Amino acid sequence: MNGIHDMGGMQDMGPIQHEKNEPVFHARWEGRVRALGNAMAAWRKWNLDTDRFEGELIPPAEYLRYSYYERAFAVLVALVVKHGLVKPPEAETGVRVEGSPKATPALTTAGVLHVLTTGVVSTRDVAVAPQFKVSQRIRTRNVNPIGHTRLPRYARGKIGTIERDYGVFVFPDTNAEFLGEKPQHVYSVRFAARELWGEQAKPQDAVYLDLWDDYLEPA
Amino acid sequence: MDKTRRDFLTATVTAAGAAVTHDLAHAQDQDHGHSHQIVPSDPALRVKSLESLLVEKGLVDRAALDALVDGYEHKIGPRNGARVVARAWIDPSYKKRLLADATSAIAEFGFFNQQGERIVALENTSKIHNLVVCTLCSCYPWPVLGLPPVWYKSAPYRSRAVIDPRGVLREFDLELPEDVEVRVWDSTAEVRYIVLPERPPGSEKMNEQELAALVTRDAMIGVKKVTLTQAQGAT
Image (tube, rainbow over all chains, first blue to last red):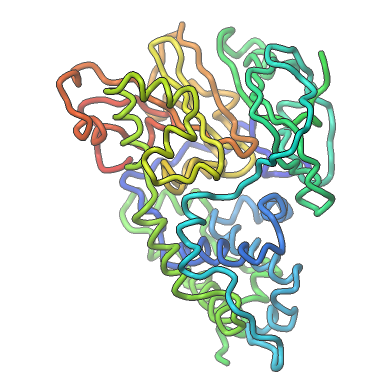
């Protein structure tokens, strides 16, 4: 989706606000949102790509106005309702519906270390033939899907070179909407900065993106 | 049930009248000291209410939440990455392993599970400068750098790092020579990048621990260089 989240190349967002000695969380609730996100993801009702896509569905004005953890909270509430873990009346009132089933937490303290040190495993140990070879020239597809994609606007229809084959990964565009994992190769692709931005870029500079087979065609 | 708890989710679901802390106001305030006061009580109350609801429904375990927050605050963070960098500076064979397969080389330290995300280390030299960004969201190498700072997740950095990396670096007081090749890494997939900065001149006699203390988070993102004087905590 050509949404506000796809920010690469925009120019009027203001100066970078670097904060000295920044704390991990600026308020207690931010840490709770982060942790609640992990704990609810452990129910496996959705995946990392679904989570990202939900964030992209926040209307542009709100997306810009919200802080990072406000967005994360909006995403969490939307996901628990959409996937039936919280009933709409509970979401309306914040009160548990009488007689709604009582669960046993999917994530306990025993699983916390795994969450912190492993993250999400998106590689797949399946034999899928790569469509491209290292050093090969490619062109990214000129596509404008209305769903989730990890091919940013600034890098569509551009010529690049395959630098490295990272192996087989889940394909986010389909995985985000439960249309299958469609495992395929991901490559590190080098684009000359001038291919992306024209003459204003330095001739030797480059931008590298990690791109799936389905985003590429031979050049 | 009290009023706060009743009202909280409606407000979030409709996204109306939500909090007023956009990234900019948030960060500006932090420049002047404590941000806690400007974050409205609204999100704090709504998050607390959601947590209570989820605990009541048996969907989350409060002790696990506490352990997660503690882990984010104390177990992962840029000190981990700094140890990796210092080791690479003093041990050529480790550096070789790190550049060839950072996932395994980092797993040697034990704070990272090799079954997790792939990590790639990018070596900065006098001729090549690497810079890491996630233009689409906030991808960042958690096990070695912890959670990303606000600026890394915010629009100004995400938008301009790819189109004007030299301008971005200037905002971090880093002016690169004209002939240096700048490589920007947009983390669009599940591969995570850490920059191996140049070892600073004058550090030849330092041991591994002293070197690790010099390495900053910003240098491992690629927005700063490591110097003998800049080491200030983890940033």
